[in-house]
Image 1 (tube, rainbow, N blue to C red):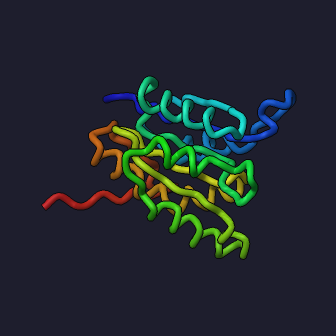
Image 2 (tube, helix red, strand yellow):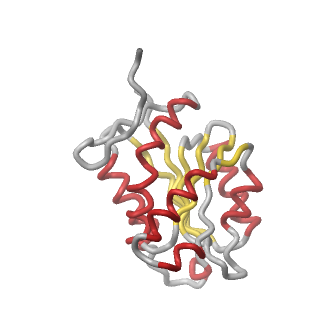
Length: 177
């Protein structure tokens, strides 16, 4: 069985400021460790909120590091420096708008400001790129909503088979006829 490589990218202005504890990227890794029972390897990056750096990082993770899934955190709000969705759209071959729609719908159950979020997702060759918000609590809420579709999406792109702890998260895969 192929070990899945999953890119974890934290986008933050504070990343280049020296002392910075990345709670968001660690939250993604923790959640994926809870979800996945199959072997996987995180390819972890903390980068500044600069579109060219985000684009180069996403391209490297997809094209050179062979990550089947790339999950970003941060840079999805309305601030002028929030450019993660633009970087994602610039490097993707096809967009997957349902991911952002579902994440905003789920977040609206908790905060009315969810409509300010610009999370998106897209495909670059054999990689699925998903933008998450920057707060660990919101990361979990959004991943709980969209992750059931992710293993099947990876299957459809001929990626590694992601097995999950179904007591924690139940992935959807159509029944064979």
